[in-house]
Image (cartoon, rainbow, N blue to C red; front, side, top):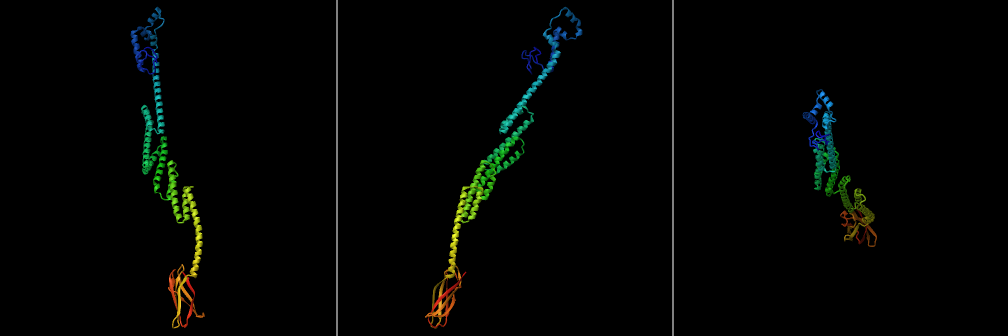
Length: 426
């Protein structure tokens, strides 16, 4: 593009000539001004005016001039004027094309910058830098206010930032051991994240899962002091064994330690009462959870040793008891009655009076005690035999009883011998 005043080459989209300072006219304005300039110059210069008048009006004059005097070359200005009808449309086309080209280049540059800012915001958001992402998107929106996607991106960033704030609040509640509220807030947040489809929210799923583990572990840890049976601890152990975190592993170890402690206490109680089967069953139950635990394994060995010793002692005790029982039975059956005293005399009427006292020296109650006796004369000849019973009818161990009897008409001094005593062991 060239200056219409001095012909100097112009820069694209220039409004003034850098050489002569002339204002550069655009499209129709340029064409109109050039036409008016031509008319003015025609009035000032008849020769130039003659060149744009119709040929029929000056044929003779022009011919005459050519005959009289021919100029070897027209001035550059006249040649340019003659070419104006061709140059003006061409210049208009160049001006319009240059403007469109400049506009296209400018718009393309803006678009590239907007896309770059959008991409930068996306990376920042994925890294959790939501404020930076928002700043980049606002810059892009300032360049392209009507770009709806930018508004959607800003809304997405705002939600992500809100969810981050929610997670921070949940973390604070966990630190305060307020697990009930933290668990409720996590449930709500999880529902909201599930409804999101943008990849930006994918990391929240993992963060929520981690917080859920922390809450579960915290609740179990909080309840641990109140659990007093192996069954209760086993239920919590099953729950926490499904969680994978360092904190979960630490609490799992605490549960196992308490299982070992309770198992040992319970087994010791059974052991003291010689309930060896229950003690071993208790230890085996603990070993189901605290596998290969040295303390429980050692305790089991102790129980088995004491059980074996007790069983050996029990055999010996039973043998001794059986021997003692046999002796006792013999005593009860052969020597259960001890004669305390016995006397017999014949009165002046020739009647024999017998009396005596016995004691139950057996270990059981005896009854129906009968005293058998024989009467001899002083030379030892048999005279008479009979029996009599002891009263009361039954005697407890250590209790005493008495007996008496009369034999009439002996009329002589005699000797009386107690031949036997019988009884029944109850």
